[in-house]
Image 1 (cartoon, rainbow, N blue to C red):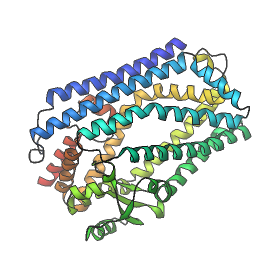
Image 2 (cartoon, rainbow, N blue to C red; image 1 turned 180 degrees about the horizontal axis):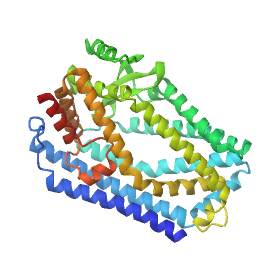
Image 3 (tube, rainbow, N blue to C red; image 1 turned 90 degrees about the horizontal axis):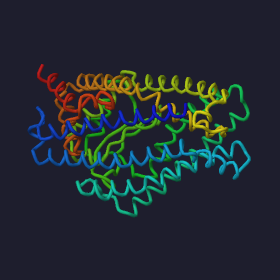
Image 4 (cartoon, rainbow, N blue to C red; image 1 turned 135 degrees about the vertical axis):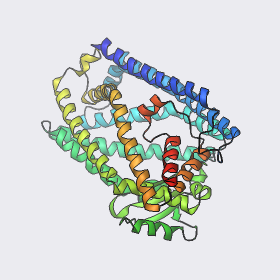
Length: 413
């Protein structure tokens, strides 16, 4: 069974690499073609930079992925999981403390392993293509803050989770599900006021008339937000974006200052109208319900499989701690979930198309949303030529060329 499990994992990894290779070959073949609708915004020089940027990011991702997969195979199938499990047990005989240490130390180790790749990406690739504005000091400060936040949150969540398992061994799957759901909602409330300000400065939108235009747009839909803010994203990168954050009464809109510099008011409104479309079409609560249902099923399945007692044997181990069994389950879960990735991506792309249609109807200017997407693609050097199969498998959004084409068709009809 151990060999079968290893082969299954290697097969999913190989399939992922094959799809990535298809995508790169497709880009090399068509990367010099300016798509219809992009002629005024993309010139051959920009297109060449886009192709080069995509290829460099892909090469770095491939090296990091190969290292991650090699270490994972050695950890799970080379006996290191058992060694690590016994070492954690020697540090503490407590079920709760041992479980917390197991996952916190793994998280810290993973963060450390990712540091060289983050440095190369930030100070070599992003710098070469004019995106990086981060200083070494700021990068280090961000790393320390993000690691501290992750460790604190993981420690608290793991302590609560393992305590629940210890207190209610027969029904922990149900209480764990409820606990995780409550924590996720709490973090959504907490993040805009406690976590996000640790990394960025937020202030009211400075452009004259923009906040009034945004609130007028929202008033048409009955959607209310507590605040409309701009964020100093340019302090770190020239990449641009906008997003909704928080939930309920603390929901607010955040605009990157880089986005505000690149787009007209009409284009900013079109981008936000798309996000409003997700709320009005019920995409947010549908995703939340689906996530919670899958979470409940996963918790119950984890309960049944850990009670079964055969998980350690799948890796050739005589026994293992509860925390180690959760790692084995997570590993099996990644293999089982791989074939369903295209379905998940398709559902997401369908919602994105619905949001585009809603935004076009709300603003009455689908061309403005098309223009904003073209600018985002140009400024972020987004790949305009993904392989269709790769896009169907991995893309949560329709390829930008497809979105622009449909929006321009709406504008001309």
